Image 1 (cartoon, rainbow over the protein chains, first blue to last red):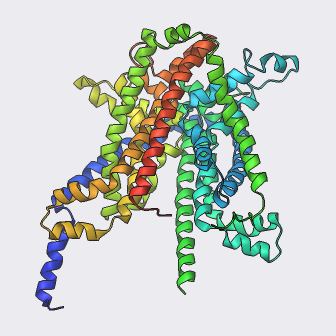
Image 2 (cartoon, rainbow over the protein chains, first blue to last red; image 1 turned 60 degrees about the vertical axis):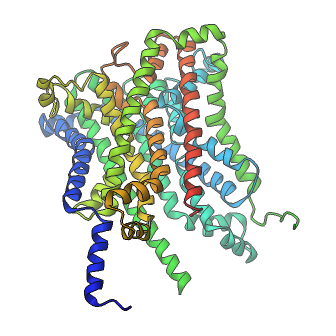
Image 3 (cartoon, rainbow over the protein chains, first blue to last red; image 1 turned 90 degrees about the horizontal axis):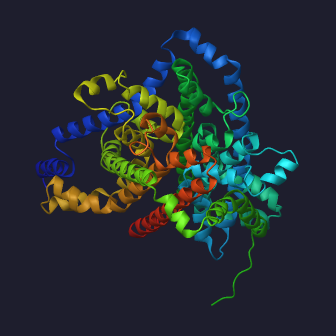
Length: 296
Length: 277
């Protein structure tokens, strides 16, 4: 208050100097970060498209419209279309129980839900071979009834469900916890049924978290390699997903085709990142709106 | 003390019941299968399978390369988070979004792409090879792939802590005469330390189990560049289910121990920073 403008100005400069790095350090840190991210993110991204188009558009188009590639895409879609809704329903149920109620062993339950993240994808495939495979627990029974799980589509779907298991639940649990239960209780007091409350109050409140979880689940479901590779049996046109198709083409030294199919998966990854960024932005907007409502 | 209030909200039994059944069917029972099946081997047989020289070599590579990759990500992840939070530059939003690429990109795609870059005729391989640096088809390639896979973890755990870090603490340190390095070392680093450790352990845990991105670039030579998950696949392809299961049990036990450590770290981290929602 007793400072002159001159003193204030100099105080600010000194403070800025003391709480930020000298320009040459800034430039050095930026250069190092750019080099690292360029080397590990941009270069691999560029390499996929460059290799895919190395032999021209004709080879590229032929590779992604060939019948084995198309059936791989279909299987990838089927696996995701089954795994995503199932894990979505589970995620909502788990988040409801964990976020809105108190019970013993809650944090242990959360840890159990996280387990699939800690398990190597290869082991995720192995467990289903041990249960449903020829030498597995249900192996003989399945043969007797002519049901194929391992080296067939059901095994691929199961492995996909396993590796994407925690995503939706993990997004929803903290979100629902933060929102408390007043709004739901109000809806019930006003006479809404349980399902009505879920549909009109709970789900709209966690909309962005839900979509976020679905995006992550879908990306992982479509891109999973290790787990699916163990249970697939690699039968072309039958039990090949897109990532497995990439592997087969690559191992046959058909690099242009392998990278062509890989480029589709890369586009999927980029779309995922764009959607994810958009959803994060929307979520922060609606959070800011809510805060404004409270202050007004 | 008041008596326990009855739940006003409905659906506790249904949602918890469904959660437990689904969790058991998809995760718990199948995982239990691994442990039960491995018990079919006697203890001495089990020990023999998981300690053959070839398997021991895979542990060394898997854990060694994962450790190096996680350390690289510790340093450069902190750097990336710092640059993204503190500096303004062109294309920052795009770069920020791209940090999650390793989560979104299928691992097989990452594997073949990195191999193409570091192969002897690749974009970088052709420059490194004449200097005697071989990356593709060597353990170094494994480190490169695992660094890619673990890249987002440290950035994403440290970034929010740095964003919330109050300028007052830094200003106070500066006004008490600390130089920039002292402020960083004594004020900022202790605050982000739990987050750094969490990100490091997450990156390490992810790298240990990684398969898809590694097998293309590793070359997969026994005793040299074979990772443990590949060993499981090799055993399975030889119909050696017991052997595959035994190695899987070793990996699972280590992974669960890591998960426990990560949970403790996160608990520590959230308690140090107060309970923010």
